[in-house]
Image (cartoon, rainbow, N blue to C red):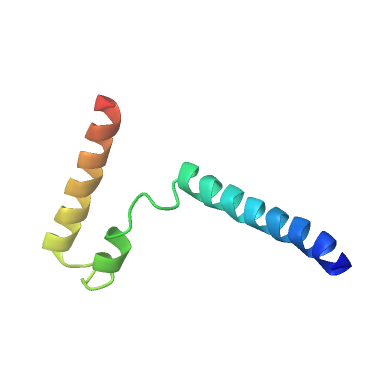
Length: 68
């Protein structure tokens, strides 16, 4: 029983730290672009069509940031 008096506060502290890390990751932009790197690895960087797609996506992101 006395072990619970130590383990419960430690468990609550660990959960609190995990929640803080989650909110930090979301606020710092860790989850902004989940699909870009996954799709980017499938294409050759020297392909002109691929580079045009990257340039178009970056231009769209800049436009969205200006509109916001």
